[in-house]
Length: 504
Image 1 (spheres, rainbow, N blue to C red):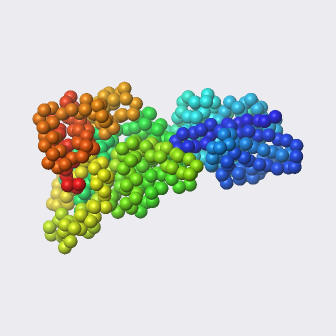
Image 2 (tube, rainbow, N blue to C red):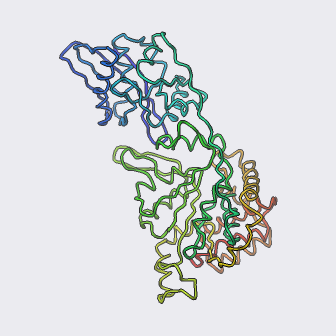
Image 3 (cartoon, rainbow, N blue to C red):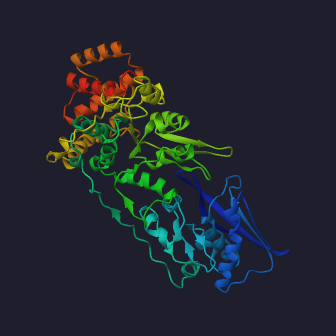
């Protein structure tokens, strides 16, 4: 008779239920695992033999066949060890068969029978809840998986404890959710002297999740400003925290099962590969744009990134998701992030400084910023020049307004947007509004519309640029707690659109 246990296989952030079937039959002694297993899954039989020997359980001299169904779905990862072990023990009548069929299991076995933590416990708990089953996982993964309240999570230190649970000798207690990480306030925008226009642009970008490009010479404070962007962003909502944590769970980034309400802030180096930024590699893992989901992706020295990497950002910026295509699968990851980019005005960095400008003006700047294609530049809602700060300004007192005051305004603006888009599942902020919905919420008054028409004609705004100006104007109006979009809101949105890398 065939014994069955259940586990999951990961396709992006989705966990697909996998049935682990085990049959022990007469024949030459053998232990085979079928159903498209990768090397880590195939090696489970050796880890399982050692773990059972440590528990004084001997395998019979028979043919043991394990099938992972559906057989055409690739199975990757060491988390298949525990479900294979449970199916085998049920086939050997060590544990009741009907008991293990009511649970989803995942975990890697060490040679002494201890359970080693694995990635993906959070999406596995979601899959267990959807199939109305409990989740059995290593103790180190219990706090993470327990955040899914709809599923009973049982975390065990080793295989022996799991066996004693299913045989009724020592039932496992349900796991408790981990701690919620508190806000980080080590940095504050009051640390930045000057750069009031750049600070205003950061506030607008944070309020509506608008993409922003800062252009300025070295040492002007671009990286310093970007590092303080998380201090003005509102905390993740419970739904957003779960979405983001599922991606971080697959990447193995959750710290001791704790789910953070802080928005992600990712800052990859400009030497990062396309697979590191977009996703891919072995197992089609999530890239930086997905790890920044619901948060910020800061790309310093933006033109220094490989051209192919920059161009791959264009579609994810528009759609909010990325599809990592492979020969045998297409893996989909969400990636609704705020792109915050910084660049020097030219290769040497001092194009705008009359006292230090190089002799290749203006070609130096055109060649350098020209690495950013027109279609990609068109996707930046806010373009800000960050001029050098005079040394005399550094001796001035700290600004009276810092991150706390800006964060309050951003939170109020986000709250207005949450109410506005309450009935729209895929739209949460102004940057995601489009079509008739955008025309309804961001239609400017007569003076604002006339100004926008003149700007569009004079500077040749694309259709995308026109709509992005409307979105920014709506966000500025939200920061002002205004019901409608007026001429002043449109004027400020236009000024951000045409600044910095103007003419692109």
